[in-house]
Length: 209
Image 1 (cartoon, rainbow, N blue to C red):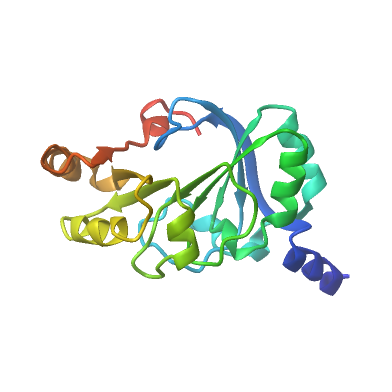
Image 2: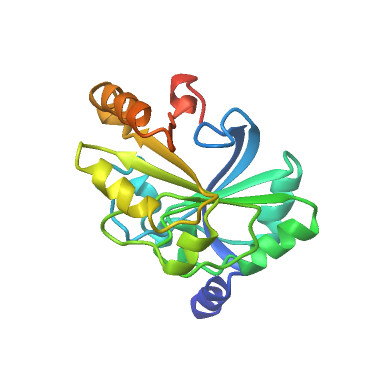
């Protein structure tokens, strides 16, 4: 039975579901809007400052049929944000097809480390140095969100901005534990380089998921 379930996961018709919840999008272009979040387990990118390390091991999260995931989402919102972990670890085609057929808007938050799958209304690309995005994800991204942990990350941000499309919206976001140190530097950088905008984790300030 376990082999059969794993085959279903590999096909994307079941996914290791960590959590799902209705909340306010706290980051980037859609901040302040209501959205239903689907957090999928599984990630080997390995960000040392990741605040959901419990998502990394997919075996820790129950394989769940995408029909059940979509039905739960349909009870709350028309805007669905799929995040992780790294959702592109898995084939997102079956789930997003189901969501789109139900009239929902599909958003993804991804490091872009794996090939792009699924049908998306909005792609938020947050690249990581440890495992860079694929060329396909760079070209498809609507929003580039670079996490700033130290001053060296500004150079990384510019390198990443050079790879996305001309219409991609550019954000610099302080890593939460370094926010007091990095926010003044980000503000100065954006004022000197106004192609960038500031993104904050407003949901943490609001004390919501």
